[in-house]
Length: 66
Image 1 (tube, rainbow, N blue to C red):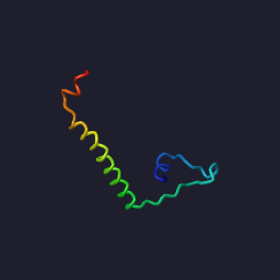
Image 2: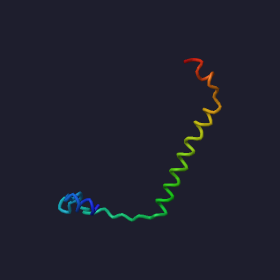
Image 3: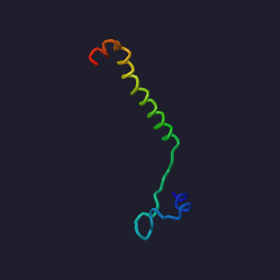
Image 4: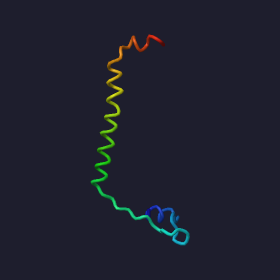
């Protein structure tokens, strides 16, 4: 945030306007890793069910009513 403010010369949270003049952050790499792995696993699982259903469908049966 400080880099963006100094680069563009703009105060996002001006102390004269807002009660909080800065947003504290604490980055934990374990949390980043856990969230990244969880998101990847969920995307893999979300693709398995539709792929499994599509593999069971016969092409002629799916196109019969088109």
